Image 1 (spheres, one colour):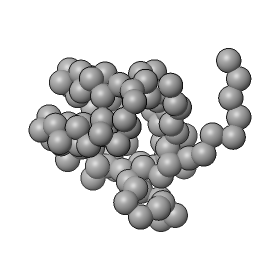
Image 2 (cartoon, helix red, strand yellow):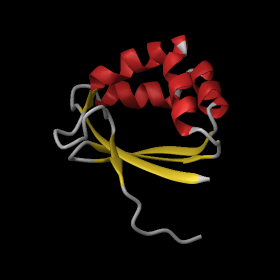
Image 3 (cartoon, helix red, strand yellow):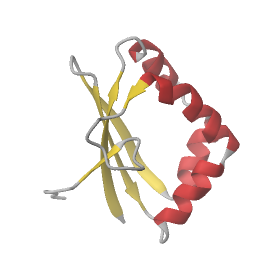
Length: 109
């Protein structure tokens, strides 16, 4: 199992819609997340800065393949098309990132 954390901004105008969407995530999207070996997935919002922190645990053996499979899923693509315009990616993110990856520097069970 590997832990992942990432960060992104959330537009002030889109905040209410984003909260509404995530209060009732589509069942097909939730199923695809589980199918792609993601567990213990959370998104936190820090206000008033409107920064979101995402955390999940990956329980598979081929992260790149699972993420490609998720990205190819039509329902997930529709979900992202609605949510992505509400987000504000960090200018400091690496090329190819939407949510900026974070490095874990501490963990205790």
